[in-house]
Length: 284
Image (cartoon, rainbow, N blue to C red; front, side):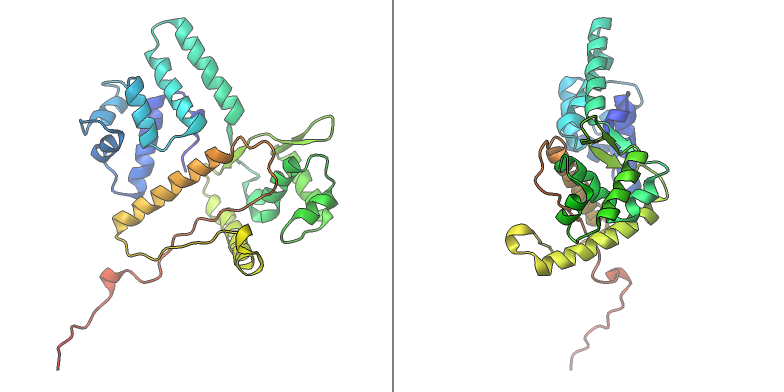
């Protein structure tokens, strides 16, 4: 998973990393990238990354949208381009100040040594949201709000871990604050092991919600489809972009009235049909 754009200072490096990430999981090409951004030359963005040309304001906007950047991430990318194109030190300074403000306001924390502990159980992610959504609430009050129910001791232990790991802070009035609104696992290999447990737990909760909650309180839908490897990669990328758009929508939520979970699941229901032997029908 790529770093957040606000952790970059060079827009060319971000474009190159984006391209490399897409290329790693699909047959993505510079020509397709340029086409998505609306450039006539299929090699234009490669020339940009090679330092042989540069993006202008309009081109920066099209490229940002082609990469799925929205909200503050879109604004940050445009500022990186403006910074390089700035003609005076005063203009450059203004861009740097605006970039720093966006980074400070929306910085995405990369979990380090506490990664496995955080994802080992669903409780930490839920308590981290509840601590902010229920200002002044005691552990037993937070525990009663959880589905499924957990103990006050579980909430206390989770709060202690979140404070110790720096994922929560507490002001002089006793109110909790998230040090970073969003979290990302970065490129750590331990992710596959750590997140697997959480995904399993959340999948089980989804099944319970399907049976126990009224339709007005949950949304379930799905599609069964036939795809090629190329289309599969495109659907995965579309899901990734949808996830980013949703994160952007909720990032500035000040007063949430509930904590929800959104699962994205896309998996095969058959074997690879290219390897399946089919006996021709010889007729009667």
